[in-house]
Length: 149
Image (cartoon, rainbow, N blue to C red; front, side, top):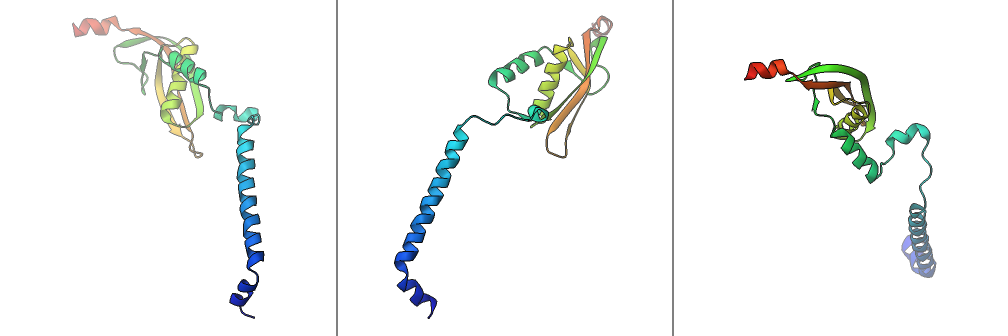
């Protein structure tokens, strides 16, 4: 018996199997959509830094980051005098370098800084971005302004 003859003789069986497979596929997709609509599973505490942030969190971070008036990749800020070094700041786990720097600025501002010096950023092996620097308070350097006049 060749395959063509067998297929001809078992058409109703093949049609039934095809219909059952299509119904199972549709059922699987429907169950997947229902599961995705449900509440998300709680995130392990060690992974909280990688969680999505709410719009309110992002907006608060942007407002805090706006308090930073200057950043520098060196130990000085041109035209300003460092009056107080507050602390080293470090953030990790962000998707883009810009998100990491914004978060770093917000963190520095929350500690009372108005500038960041020694700013550096890296991308980890996992593809996430980190940023680090020193949070400082600065003021315009009046001696430098006098020279410019």
